[in-house]
Image (cartoon, rainbow, N blue to C red; front, side):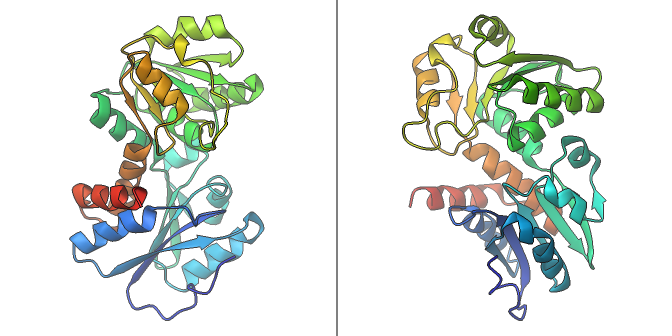
Length: 290
């Protein structure tokens, strides 16, 4: 666990991102741009913490007066049991990515769903209510966002995953949180079922890590994508899958919009002020192009 900054005397409001690893994160530049734009004296630090050390790290952050922190993989589920109060939406998703420290009392929230909703609206003009959404993958971010979408009024969630049993478990979670939402589970090998489900979708969200590394296989052939259906990849750059979707005639967007808007929501929860979205976007884009 990286603790050399935790014990320094505080000179400003302190925020952080906890993860394993986190060295690649551009959140400090994004949040820092927000603080600077509003004249807030605050810092945002990266803290790499192994899962076995997470509890100790959270206690240190609380006791040394950190005002709040973000949580990323692999800690979003584990941290739920380390905060005093969990927002109902985060509880339903089984995931916390934002913590507020109010005088030693920790409050946990999930802003991933808000971030994806805002990104889809900004990129494609897509709203959630009464719509169909297809999620490829059922990992942490896809889990949190699919539950959020169902709770916000999506009519039908289609879960496509290599391991069907994992998708079925997520479907059970969604059904408990939003019983009125229709659910479909499809294995990645179910080519015909996928082809039939996709045309109904208001958007297709690629939530696996495939495309993060060179040589990764595609989630499924982009040639199966119907033209004109928006496709968003949660990865922060144009992946081969996203490029293939564009060749099919699909409007596309990578994960930068989601990253921005989940960070915007975290900023507003911490500061109780309207986030300077343009400044935070500029900070994010500058960091990603370095």
